[in-house]
Length: 45
Length: 172
Image (cartoon, rainbow over all chains, first blue to last red):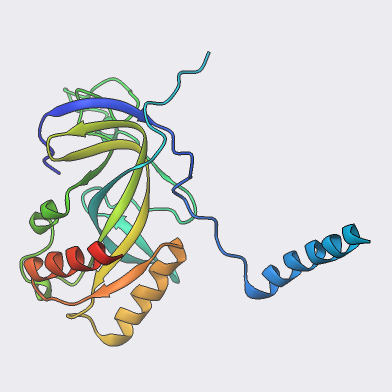
């Protein structure tokens, strides 16, 4: 690309990383969710 | 001692790719160097000027982007995309893709765009009007593996496509 003259140079370190986390398959998401429900229920006892 | 970055949000510009077949997958390919963009990982800039060993004006090995080189991952404004799309999309057998790209690392800001160390697509727009419907579906589905929004756009000329993308991007 013909971008023209450089105006300035800086460093960028994004806090929110631009590469998305791949979404887990539906059945995997279910597996991850179940233990937290158990833990939550356990903490109330 | 580490230096604090100047900015903590990625720069977002526009660029054009081709959607290409890579085995059973569909990948983004840079237009000039035909670099295949990885999924779920950033593209890391490397200076291609170093790959011509006998070239008498070859520069010493350097990080990309460098001040006295044209290396780095390029992006520009949406208006600049008109100059990269074929005037009539039916003139090409390749599948052009226009999209927003996040840039970070060392960023060189130019008058009409940027060059950067790292990049990953942020959203993709595929002109599908001149594509066979099955091929269009395959390209759209394949590009969704980048885990970013992928939208079909209408238009059979560069101007039509850029106008359609501008409108969609404004409401996205």
